[in-house]
Image (tube, rainbow, N blue to C red; front, side):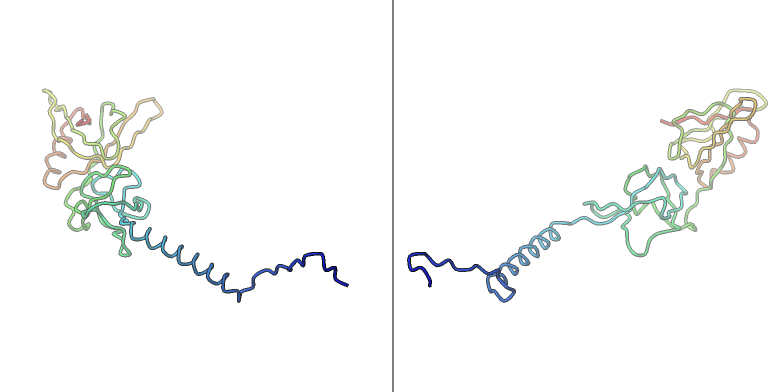
Length: 201
């Protein structure tokens, strides 16, 4: 027999999926998440562009290993990362590591008119002469006379530093030389008793 003096405690039941309060709560959460995503997308005005993954010199051929994709807020004029990737295109100027690649600095291999010339330096080359650096080439005539600058402000495409068994070192500096300057440079090197590759600053 139920005690008339005790209050009756109602048994609480967990709300089911048919409970309108639960349905309304889920809808409110979904609307809030959708709104936040929409606001973030509207505020994100970045575009994917290519940046140099390493120092790149004129004549460098673009491929997946030489570039990285950066999402930045920039104006027009940079090489955008699109489905039609510019693999095989050639750089016309030096681009430093992490630097965004200008669209104007890229052209087809057929249009690129510079040539890579190997210059064997007979005197030590400074350690800061690396890929992308600008250098001057000085030559001392074999028949004697003062050294003269035979090329100016040429970009370095590659540097090979070798040590032989006798402790002597030789450095070959590969330069990107405009096609119309190649002949004069080769003539000067062919008749030189000494060649120096000097940083142009």
